[in-house]
Image (cartoon, rainbow, N blue to C red; front, top):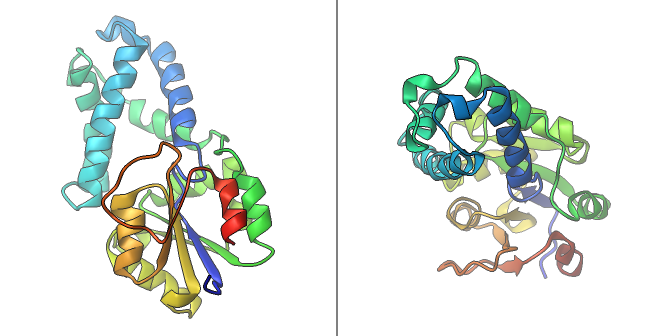
Length: 231
């Protein structure tokens, strides 16, 4: 085992419980805006369309096919149309309400804070995320994760998105450290694992669903508490 000094974490789906927080917000929005009256007959249909469209747009964002402004402008227009309504039926404040409501949710994944308390006694902890500045900062504050991290690096600030290794180089430059002293922990093989590999940083693939991937991460775990045995 190498002697690491700096641990980089992804945020969404790794520490912050994206699925639970988003599901709660979408359920609230479905009721508040009476989406059944706007042509979306069930919450399940709305939820399914959200996942289909949102993940597609984020995939495009991560490879530079769409920017932040267009992602946010297009997201619910496409979701409403996919769910059987009209893209013109989206209430004007819907996107902003979704962003603010979701980012205010506090739920984190099992063992998140326990493992962060354990790790911060031994390492410097940081976040590297492709999320937007204002929403990621709000998520960390609302969930109480902000107290654990020395450095938060976002794609919006650096201009580089994982898996571009330059976002990792930026973090290492800020910390005045080198790749052999760093470890990246994340759930997304296409951004977290590949990006860290391109920067010559060891990786922990957080894989609670047991996905099969082509990449060969340095380590793989199914729950965060397993990090105690590695670190």
